[in-house]
Length: 195
Image (tube, rainbow, N blue to C red; front, side, top):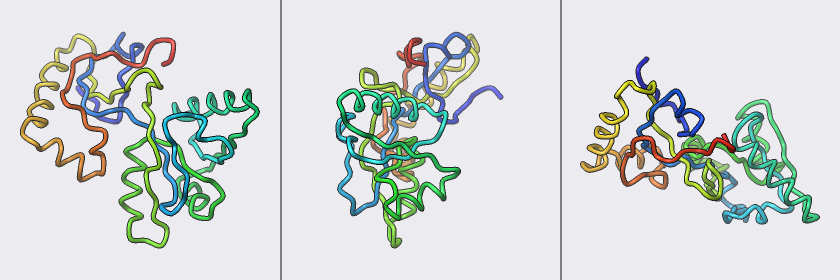
């Protein structure tokens, strides 16, 4: 395999071995029932008093547990729940056992489109950069460092952006909000102290 296109986050740690051509924002998202009042407003304080599910061992779990600790220091509660699989998570969401699910935005955006028109529709109820509050994380085509593939990949992605095909593809997957205006070679990535 010469190039990876599998939701790979650009990190400074990975740049030691790989080169990148960015093609999408690395956003995490909250999914909630369509008729719920839950909305994440970009500030962990909006999670006080809620119950949120997250996948174990994920970047979003690390972020959510950090927010939980901050809320506890402020005397507020955030309950974090784990489930074995997606079906269990969505059953808990639909039955009101959790207020929201925190996961990778593309997965949740796809699920939102799949629930539209069903008895249990959901919605994206807020987003957060996978790189944290101070840096917009990026998803990138990834190749071995020194392969020389990042620049032609970025040129190809920029061609798709310029001719409008990129926007059509993102719209088809309900990911228009994650569009980048240009593909960049080795843009700033998740810092070493946060990867």
